[in-house]
Length: 487
Image (cartoon, rainbow, N blue to C red; front, side):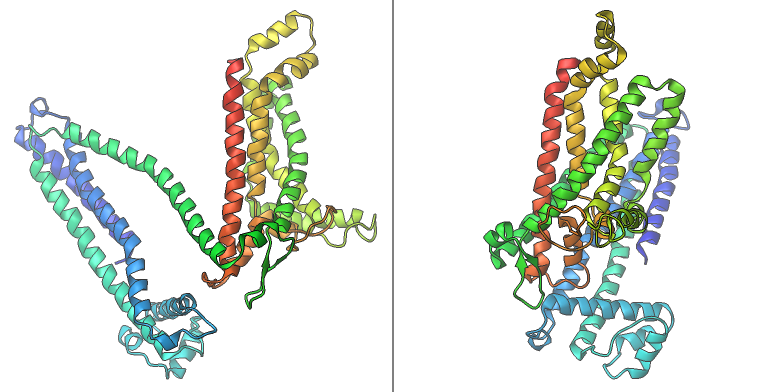
């Protein structure tokens, strides 16, 4: 049974349980609400909670565990000769999943029956032709081992889905029956429901922390594995980035780090002055009507997807800069993809980020400080320059650092606007690349996670994580340390 249907059935059982629990509680009290320990809704909520929560817990746990069990079982049945010197078990398992998906698609579309897919042999020229006509490609190099493993993969997944359906519905029905039997007028349903809601809130709050820990651990373990296969000294101090999946790669992070910082610097040079001046105007000069219109229009930039900014850089800003600084102009620029192209567009993207944070920070400066400055005879501009901005400066610096961390982690604008050349150069009109762009390129396609060329993506991600984490911590430190002086 599809997971969505299963979830809907469990929710429907919870709704039925709510009605039954509420009705049973009222029945035990003779229809008099005053005899109940809790309100009738609590009795219904108790049944719905004990119906849905255990079933969803089983469902989530099963969906997390089943892929590991199936992959481990199928990979264990692969013979030694299935993994040659030119491939790895990871790539073979990728082929197994691809073939299994193709067989599932063929069965779902009616091209072949379930029995035919289960008993398929490697001599299936006519079947491959039918699958190809339907857009399902199994390829001509499917070995007997891979085909058998794919069939076993499908079988285990089907069995797992059936067991999951039985267990989830069983947990929902058992919880519903048990909680309905508890629904009598002396049962403390309100206490149970409130304790359950508190546990749910704690779980939701813990998920963010656990997700962060999981991300960090996945990066750490794969980074350690990378440094076991590639020297850390070469990674951190080499000036060459030249990956080669055939061997002989040079994986120095410095060219990528230079491109990242260079593009981010240009972006900040664009975003900080414009965003800060916009924030000062909106908070100090604009009237309520102008502010009500201008601020939402400025923040529309924050809602534009980064891929759209990337296309804007590729199709508009790049050709515009090329016409001015290219061969027909100053002669400094050879192509539309360059550091300047990505930096300008990224700066435009960061303007609402800087302006919104700075506007909130400037508005937080007490009005009494402005009034005191006016009382001493200062003009409005003098008050802004000598009182408001210095008072808000720690928060503004924190906003700039947060914008810098946002710029460092940007990908799509860099991919489409800056090019893919990993080089150390001071010329902003040359193509360069960043850490995030190379993470994408190294993990595109069927990556072999036993090779340094694929594992380097995790080392790059860990390096970027440490840099952005440091910027965020420093920004929050500045904001929290100095904000209290003006409260």
